[in-house]
Image (cartoon, rainbow, N blue to C red; front, side):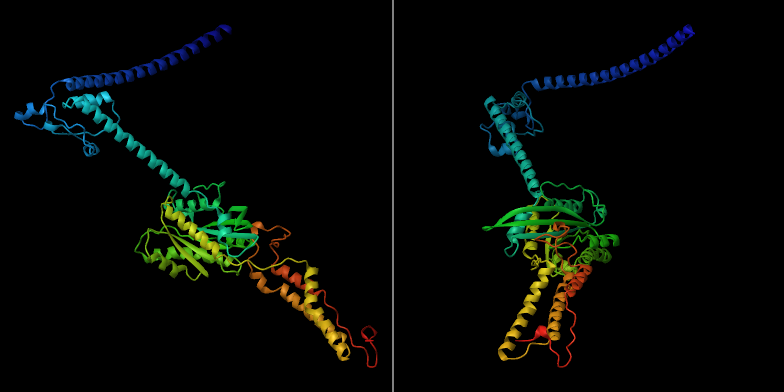
Length: 504
């Protein structure tokens, strides 16, 4: 058994070694063949260079483009010295009797090589060195200009892709003087799935999101797959306006394309548009076409996006709208936007954008659009926060107590008896009905307040809870206020006395 195992192992080792040796020899042979081929090419290149060198070293060089009678005269040194600046700029050397020589440098050459070439045309050594210095100076100047242009373009790109300082813009351009400011903007972008990656429309949409994202955010070159409204960025900071410090809270929301029915229901349920202060609509780049159907689809898509958002948000207040139109210019664009979208918002502003995002004009246009939105922001609601007991007590004291005690004093001075208890109870109950109607008014349901992203679960000193104006909550408040009403009191029998209301 041991001998058989040893024979089998030896046989397997022999097979393995033969295969490995064969493969190694094959690879070595291939490398040698490649080396021989490259060596042959190198020998041919060396032979060609030696032949060219021998030809270049032949002297005197035969002057070109001159007839036989003037060859001797052309060999005499007659090149200009110093070399004219305009000739160097055009790549020309004036050789005097031998004519003019054009030089085109595609790569850097050594001073010795340039001197050897110039010596073949009988250029003096001093002029040759001067020509070399001039060429080197032009080359360095060109390289410097290229580097400066490269860094200049890089700086322009960095500035163009830098985020906006939204808290400072809001604090500076918001009308009025408030200690706490809440501003919410909704970016309405085209559907990214309809645009190819790297297209101008996709780049412009990503650039716009970067402008509103902040310094810590990043945007991927892809459309949102959630199909709804997402929070792009939140800002909390203190900004100065004159001698006043303002607490600025900014929220940026973004949506891509038209919303589905499920997404609209989710927007209304989650109150994504509650507290919105403005809309910014970016239209996709329009492809020139003579087909009127495509033109209608282009504008109807944008109109559908706006209608969905305006229907999903609360009715009040009306929001300012900015429409960003990628265009190369032309006054007809503004007229088309007004005809297609002019009735969808109380305030509207159109901006023509250029596809090149590194343009300073584009950045300034977006900055002006944000300033316009902030300056036309809806006025903040004059709301106050009170407990139910405080609200009832203040309302009763303002609407009932003053009237009751004034009437009582007048009657006492006039010698008249007091009002009947039923009349007083009726006045008290009517005041509570008025307070209940005010606190449960249907107009409160249409108010777009507070900003969802900054509201707390149980409410705070600055913002109420999200369901403060829900119909169910208002109905509960109405019943709670009406619960303080007094029951009607039956009148005493004729001839009887009501001791509790008897005057003395």
